[in-house]
Image (cartoon, rainbow, N blue to C red; front, side, top):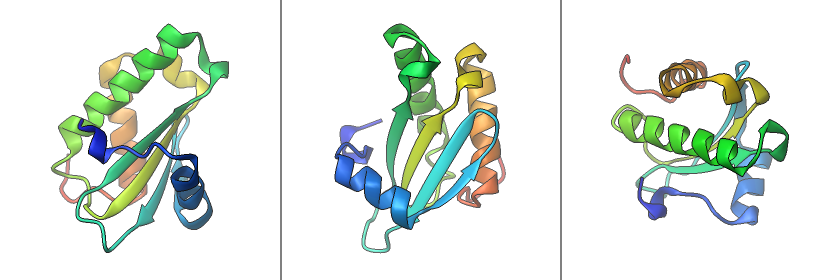
Length: 115
């Protein structure tokens, strides 16, 4: 996923937290904020130190980024998304992470097509 599709600044994260809507399952929390003036969607990731060491946290972030890359055609444009990983995500492999993300994104009603 290109860096222009990422949320990096703390202020941008806080805007999504305050103004966006949240949806959750056991593994992930997704905040979504509609931005009509924005052409593409952007993703911000948050994986707490409570989940594991840096190797584990980076593995989870790589899996989430790859899942989003595979789902980018189905995701609605013009949104900012912040994905927060919860502790059970540490024991999951890539396919479980992807299916869990699909589940929570369907709850958020931000997937265009059926996956």
